[in-house]
Length: 162
Image (tube, rainbow, N blue to C red):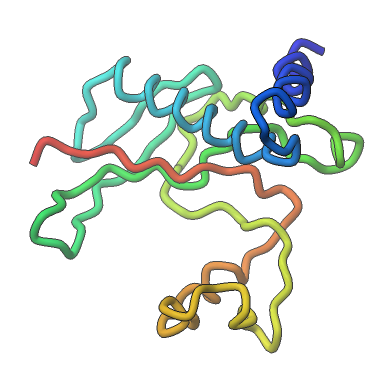
């Protein structure tokens, strides 16, 4: 499989760079996110009223979101964008494979499920978050209610010209 070669290269390079090979999934996520962002930014001018972009795997519809911030302008959000095929069934515990293409416009307006993690009484344990963040722990807990092993999704934020 051609997708395994970067995985093997990363594992071989980690000791030489003084890095742990267990960093491969976050690194892969970062690279894929950067590549998708570059594809979105370079290939098209977004219509901010109905942002639809074409990717290698199909079309995505996002939405414009105003930020409650005086400095930051609005962004176009593409939420729950798959960056790999679901790691379920025979793909479980295997290197990621490219996502499955789609033919219709994919609605990228909701967060995808998060990977399985422990919840105590419907909320995250306080030890999982820095002390300064625990004031908003109820808000964070609401984002981890939808859990699935099919959790390989990106949330992409594109600045607007406003």
